[in-house]
Each structure stands twice: as C-alpha cells, then as structure tokens.
Picture 1 (tube, rainbow, N blue to C red):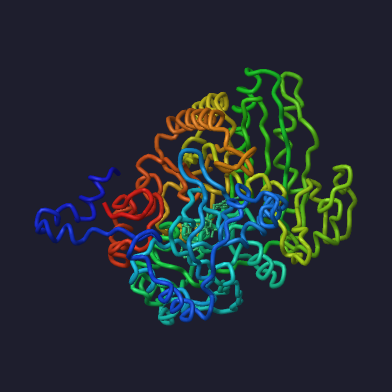
Picture 2: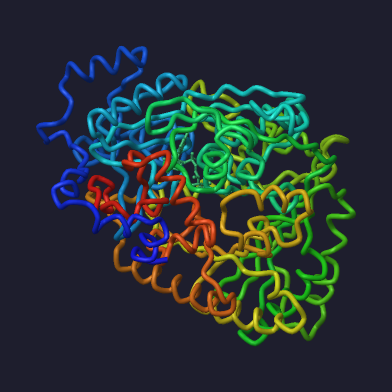
Length: 624
Ligand SMILES: Cc1cc2nc3c(=O)[nH]c(=O)nc-3n(C[C@H](O)[C@H](O)[C@H](O)COP(=O)(O)OP(=O)(O)OC[C@H]3O[C@@H](n4cnc5c(N)ncnc54)[C@H](O)[C@@H]3O)c2cc1C
C-alpha cells in the first residue's frame, strides 16, 4: 500500500480539504532537539527525575569513546565485550545491532528513564508529550531496524523490569465470564527469553513461547509476532499473549486483553513494537512441556551445480514427506558453495524418532549416483526438555561445550537425563567477573552481536509450493536464488503444518495472514561485526556491503517470483522494505491504522516502518 492509498483507507485524506489552511499549519508537529529553545530546562529534567524516583539517568555511549579515547576504560570494556549480548544489553546507549549500511547507525538518547514500574513509564510518557520530545523505547534492544534508538530523544529503558510470576489458573481482567482459567506467566517488560525459559521451563517444567535467540526481549518479540524454534508446534509469541499492561500516549496505564480494550490488545499482538504504547508487563500462555527436545545438525555437499540441483529437488520432496509437521523447527541453509546445511530442532521425539525421518535422505546421499556426500560430523541428539535452557545443567554436564578444549565436543553419555549429548558446542557463558550463570547464549548467536548490517530480507513461502506439481518450481527457484547468495529456510517461522490450536491463536493476531499457511520464512542476510562509521579500523566496508545487499535482493527476488507474494516478518526484514504496510500486515493494515489513530493521534510513538510512520519524516521528528 502506498502513502496515497493509506491516506484513503484511514480517511484522513478526505478531511484535508475541509480544514482551513491556518489550522493545518497549527497541526504541524516537530519534536524538539537539545539545540532548540523548546528543549526542557534543567529544572524540568530535575522534576522528571523526582517523579521517577531518581531513575532518570544520563546515557553513556561507549562507541563515541572508541573515537575519542580508545584507551579509556569505557572503550576498552566495549572492545573486550563487544560479542557479549548481556554486556551490550546492559548499556542504555547500545543496541544489539550497531546499524545498517545506508540506513541507520545506533545513537544514544540524551536521557533515559530506567523504568522500574508502570508509574515511571507513565511519568516519562507524560513528560515527552508535554515537552514535545521524540520518544524511544528499548527492552532487549534487538531491533534490526534500529527502532529502539533515536538521537536527541528521551529513552524509556525497561531492562530492570524483569519480575516473573507463574499462574496456575489465569483469567484476563474482565474476562471472568467468557474465558476459562489457564496456566500463564506474567513477565516484566524488560524480560528476555533466557530469563523466561529459566523460570518457566527449568524451574516450573512448563513452556512459554519466547524467541530462538535467548537475549531477545519478550515485549519486542510479542509485539512483532514472534517465533521460537518450536513455533510450528506452539504458534507465535503474539498468539500466546493473554493480557498486557500498557501506558498509552495520554499517559494512562491501561489493561489490554480480549475483554478490556480488545482493539489495543489485537494491535499489540503483532502490530510492531514502539507503536501503540509502552508495555509495562505481559501475561503469556504457558504450555505443557514434552519429555524431550532434540536436534539434528547435518551438512550435505554436492560435487557440482547439477548435483546441487538434484539435491535441492530431493530435499524439497524429502521435507514435505518427512519433516513438514509440528515436530520439526529451525532451519535449512542453502548457499552458492553447493552445500545444504540442516540445523533443526525437534519437539517431543525420543532419539530413535529423531533419527528415523532422516534415513531416506541419508540413503539417497549414500547412493553412488547422487554426486553428494555428508560433510563433517552429523549430530542427532536428544535431551530432557526441562534441561534445554538450564544453565546450571549445561555448566555441570557440558564443560567442554562451555569451554571447549582443542575444539573437541563432549561425546560421553553423561547420565540418564541426557540421552545423547548435543555435541555441537552450543553455549557461551558471560565470563565477566560476577556475571550470573543465567547469562548464557547460543554460540551461533555470537556472530550477530554488534553487527552492522549489509542487507537483510525475509519472505514467507506458501505451503502450496510443496504440492506435487509445484515442487519442481520451488526447487528451481531455490537453486537459482542460491547462485546469488546464501539463505535459510526457517521452518518454525511459518505455521503451515501447525496444529489447529496454534493456528487459531495466530489467526487472532494482526500478523500478515500469510504466516498461517507458510511452510517457512526465508531469510537472507549478512553484515560486519563490531563495525561503526567513523571508528578507525572498524569502518563499515561500504563497497562489499552494497554488493551483498544487491545479491541478497536478487536472491530474494527470485524467491518472491515463485512465492507469488511479498509477505515479510516485520521484526526480521528489510529496512528498505517496499510497501511495508502490505508486506508486514496484509489485509490487517487498515484496522491497525485506525487503532493507531485512536490511541496515539499525535504520533508520540513513531518507529521506522511502523504503523502510522508514513505520516512522519524518516527521523520521526516531523509530522509530514
Ligand atoms: C540476534 C537476534 C536474534 C533474533 N532472533 C529472533 C528469533 O529467534 N525469533 C524472532 O521472532 N525474532 C528474532 N529476532 C527479532 C526480534 O524478535 C525483534 O527484533 C524484537 O522486536 C526484539 O525485541 P527487543 O525487546 O529485544 O528489542 P528492542 O530493540 O528493545 O525493541 C524492539 C521494538 O519494540 C519496541 N519495544 C521494546 N519494548 C517495548 C515495550 N515495553 N513497549 C512497547 N514497545 C517496546 C522498541 O521500541 C522497538 O521498536 C532476533 C533479533 C536479533 C537481533
């Protein structure tokens, strides 16, 4: 949908001619910057600090220290910890991604309210509104699009709001007559996946839908739609939202659920973070845990382009036949070097059941005519689900995984809990002195911290592409796309093959309905770690970056052609996404735009390519 169509849909275009010119001029909104006369005085900031219990803090920017005082303590701490997502997450002036070539580079806010409760948030929102400030909201800080940082802004930072409370029988406020009690968990707005998994799975033996990446914030995840590795079974994170406490632009603390403010509730379920208000806490559905989770890591290498074509064709029918169900999530990676790499996770399968479906593919590869071979080590593993995110267990049983010696993974069968060791060195711990054992993350995630993105695109692939008569077209497109750039099929980020309950929950969200029938979300992306403009020796490589962005675009164009649509996942997509309203929300956009107008008529909450952002300048300071 272009801007003109959008205005028509939401009705504001029709109003324009009726308004006198001077009234139009009066409605212009331009947020103030520190250099403007309207910037709040020191006295006013002092009053805000008192109103938020002393939690108004200055925002350090260690990246600037790299430029001015590279040997100083702040710069050295950044250099030492730049791949540690917990260190990065604890800095109000940093974000998990450092930027995106030709798009954005992370910048600090002028001040931050390090909120401790909804009251602090409400005070910050009122202050921003009364003083015409640009507002930014940051939780886990994992926005790829840079939507949780804004220079010259006031930041609401929720990192410290991490209370977690389990409920055995939760009924949303006001829903007593229409909803049955359900097991649930209430999490503070700053809660990241690892902390939620620790409380819900390790301690309580249950499951909550967080992200695959352990340091993603749940508030940002849920508002984006949100997928974990097992979303094909449990559905989206947005689908599991039962209730939110949210501070809207008028400074009111509201409850949003299916019975109270249901329009706001629906918009929070996938309408994008930083857009409808500031969520202070959320209550999420809790599910039963299966006995086991499992994993398969396996790489097949083809000896020629022709063999790779055949391998991909074989893979498409193999996937449909053996893995296209709610038991299997995570990814298959395709690449120009003719490799097909699986990094998969299973739900509720014991070790024999994990291994069994792979045999037909292994047999096909072993066939002398395939032109393919298995590369490196194949891991098929299974673990008691309760220990999957259990830091203490990892430390105790997988010392070689946490601290690999000579890169050798642990092979031994440790005890009856661990059926077969997940031997891929999977986990990294925060090694800063005094760091909690809970500060752990998947090793594969390390490469994403502090990345300056070159390109990043996503696309949902409809399940119809797996039908008999479409498989060859899909295989051809996958092969052609792989000539341009590597990409991954994230099976857990499409709900084709999901159980009816998961589909019903996701259907009641505002995520693009394309997710319901997609067998996978394709993601192609690349970037440069620990890079930032103007820092000597760490400048983003613009030539390589623009070339990569173009190759990513060509690969995805080929896949868009076979998909017959351009539907993308808002939280993992192109900063330059064309027609973003339709791509992210499809037919849900007009309703979202109405809800935005109702709860935030003056655009206090504006993020790049968010609902309503088409009415604002790219920096979010000026209403167009
Ligand atoms: C390394 C990495 C791995 C990822 N893995 C996954 C994955 O496995 N599955 C998946 O689905 N996605 C994944 N994502 C995408 C991620 O889910 C989104 O970027 C998500 O929005 C991040 O939330 P956050 O709180 O960490 O980030 P933030 O950058 O803090 O917030 C994201 C957006 O939400 C807003 N926001 C944050 N908190 C609030 C609040 N309390 N109220 C209102 N608005 C708020 C921010 O203003 C911003 O616009 C990943 C991203 C990264 C960088």
